Length: 440
Ligand code: ASP
Ligand code: MG
Image 1 (tube, rainbow, N blue to C red):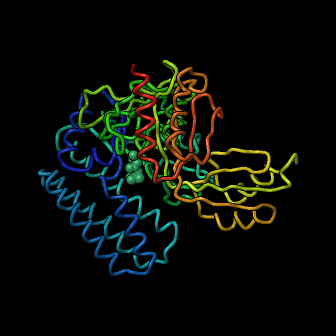
Image 2: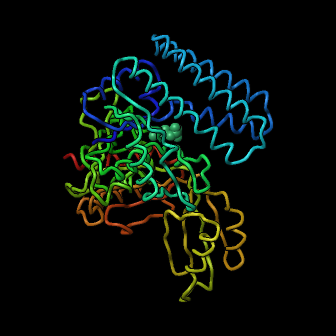
Image 3: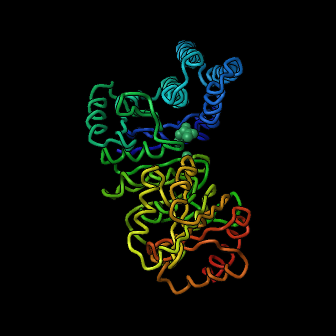
């Protein structure tokens, strides 16, 4: 069986839902994972923030506005009066729940419950739409099987047995629809797999059922060789290995949730990226086959903070890095890039929640410099570190101020740290130097 995930744009309008219906309606049994309609999760985040800041009346206004939008969508989607009524009742229930949450003590659990509504709404509406169109489909509620553990990681053994149980007990259908993103945590409270987490839901289910393939359907024709939002003339990459895709997803290619390939990599279950708006386009196939060497793609991740830690005592002293890393570990902050010299170490983080506390600890034994608004530009390709054309990327040093460079950490990745203001120019230049030459 295949698992097909459709993102927010794919279910973002009645017209696009009809495209999704056409794509999945081939009579072959499948599991379909849906995101919230595009824009909904962002709106829910801002509603949650409004509630958190005590502006209840403003929050209720926004909830009513969103409810109006959903009721209109139901009318446009469902002309069958029984299904229309049933769906409107469901929509009204969800929004009543949201309004009730406005008056509760605000907490992380309240926030997570608010954020979960988008996927509950989109799947309910879409399932009824398929039923209206005479397609055999049923809902598999994600909250009945998707679990994260105390470390907020998917609890695969629990998910597997709960999923199998759920699957046995629902009414058999050709299409099984479930919510992406949402789950329960170890306390059985509603939680989620982080923003963009529907991709992760799809590969977790893919691993649990040992799917033949997982397909991620978005509004772009696969993973591009450079960021199409800021560079002209990018093109989709036909084939990527799991390692290459993992590096790209982690370092900025927004098309995939960073953890997407982890659950399926060990079993080599292929992940195919496809475009709902252009289903015949090949897209990108992520699998365990590695193709040609050399730079395959460039991605950039913004919002990076660089920390330079300088200490006279570092000179020929062992245990210095351990001391530094322990501080980051205590404050649960992961380090992305790291470079060292004999007297200093520079590293980057993207989560600055505990930055002040980290700096206070570091300042006890070192001099610190912090640079904010940095971007990591990451070049990915099988064995690029050994490839004889890779030197061309250093032409970039003529034109751009590079704050850090990481080469050889893995054979498939070279990362540069630059000011975010230089990002677009750097991506364009790398495109010109690296891909233009590769094409000669
Ligand atoms: N709806 C969630 C988000 O916007 C999850 C997803 O779309 O993948 O982040
Ligand atoms: Mg996404």
